[in-house]
Image 1 (tube, helix red, strand yellow):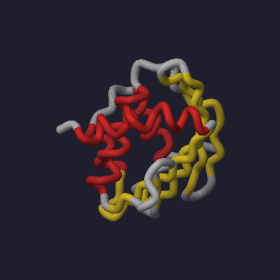
Image 2: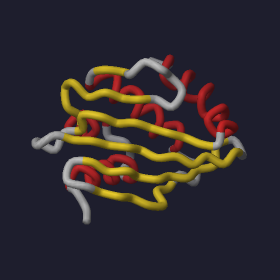
Image 3: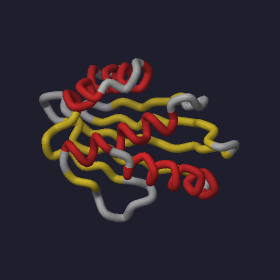
Image 4: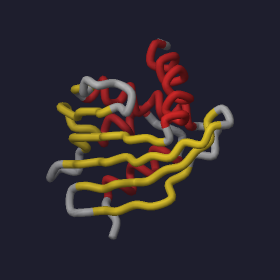
Length: 129
């Protein structure tokens, strides 16, 4: 089973990280749940900034999805990557509405050492203009 939302997400990740394509995927009230930040990041702009930063950070690494489970309006995508020599494994839990717009994007990551490797890189990318 596949979904147009997940197909479009893969195109964004694999196809050069087009901000317009990401914007089209996100609902105005989308919420991003970071593995490193307790507070949900609310709104399209904040969600897009976190997803763009993650796409840039993982770009040029061996990032790849290894599994995916897709429901009617949700999916879980498992990924693996190596960041600065550290193995990172995680999931993207994605929910979307009837209009195929992402309303929730939650990232969970392991091992802790992997999360520690990505946190400073994400902070740097998020603080860049």
